[in-house]
Amino acid sequence: MSRNKFTGPGKPYDETDQAALTILEEYQTRLRLTQLSTNPIPGLFVTMPA
Image (cartoon, rainbow, N blue to C red):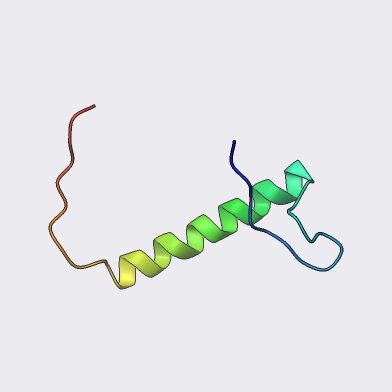
């Protein structure tokens, strides 16, 4: 079980509205992907087969 970390006034523990949570997660994912595309993490990463 995982817990989301979208807290704020009136929601001290997490976001419980699934529609709002989806929007927040998608926004944060797009933001992070944009950050990584402009400033990638340095290093050599090896992908292992599943």
